[in-house]
Amino acid sequence: MTFEEKQFVTSLAELDAMVPPATGGAAGKTMHRIERYARQFIGLSPFCCLATSDGKGNADVTPRGDKPGFVRVIDEKTLLVPERPGNNRMDSLRNIIQNPSLGLLFFIPGFEDTLRVNGRGRVTKDPGLLADSAVDGKLPKFGVLVSVDEAFFHCAKAFRRSGLWDPATQIPRNTMPTLARMIMDQMAEVANEALPGQAEVSAVDADIEENYRTELY
Image (cartoon, rainbow, N blue to C red):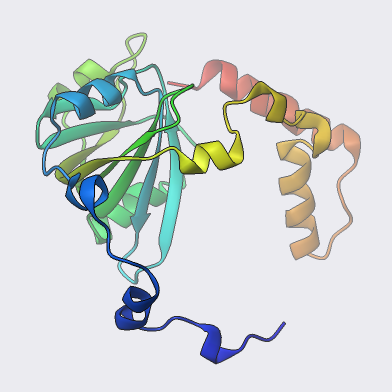
């Protein structure tokens, strides 16, 4: 597909000419600390997305989830995001070591508004700092200590458009193949190999479920 270059918006001046400036709450809502409402929202949130980028500006975003309040408010300018066991790629931590700028988007099930926090992160391994993030006696190896630059609430339009929390919009998981099937097929296609058989895929699906059961913390 080809695109017309003249249809791209390539300057801030052109963008500003097409959209009226933000006013009222949209213009003045940015806080530079975690005040009482942001603290309460984070304490109720069991899920957030963490956006980072590497030293070359390549962007990435990862989901983070745990019991409500798993992201700890250390003080009004500092958050701690525990690093739970995953696939050992460590994409976010690698990025933060190269480029500390990050963004967080907090969700609460049933809430249509969200909380955005932007700041700078450092990767900590301090057992004293991480102790309060232990689950069943298991201490996270790392955490992301976030210095808060700005925090503000985001309106519900995206949720109203998507119907994200509406049970009527939920799509049965079997609409698409399992995670193991999709990844194994992708890897086989890249390697120009035959697609794996169902027995092999089912075995990997079972391994994934066992990992979920035993390696969440």
